[in-house]
Length: 266
Image (cartoon, rainbow, N blue to C red):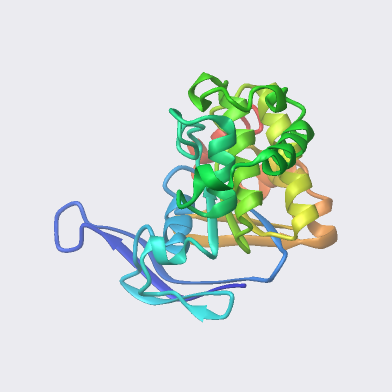
């Protein structure tokens, strides 16, 4: 599903602020895998997602998604293959449009024919989908999305992603801005949707417990390198304390290791 070959990326090359993130990064993620990605600030986690989504380009190396070479394709050309949810709940929805119109945009992959297509049958379908979120949104379909809470908007963004059905989804700390209760609900929905629809998933998280509890594989990044890659029984046997110890053993600084122990976060 995803294959990165020899990825090199330097920001501000040739200037005093030049910073190389990746020096020959290689990564393969199989179809249907749910991979959690952890690491300290500056480890390269979000840069990895930006390279896969096409938000930025590699200086060298190749990016393959679903068997196709996407290396030189811009973000909008990759959108049919890649869905992405960001940390900011405001980023994935149109605040001045209603809940049902946001869902219609996702279902139709754009604005064309929006009003013509939004009929009674379609509204009933949306109502049923929203009821499964268990947030009362099925009774707020004509409310503007800007009136919803952060947790409700992030859950709606997840549902919109499901309706658009990209084969690959990138979750960039998508619960970090939510309160604990909403974060757990959004994570439960993430697990359900990924399992039911078989999305290939990369989830960057600062929550150690989430990184261990969810997904089939865990990657730990440090200074642009993948320093730990575990799955199966080995991942199932991980604990937060054990993961912090592994992080320290792999050469993390004392301050980075300390960050890992605070509230289960990286």
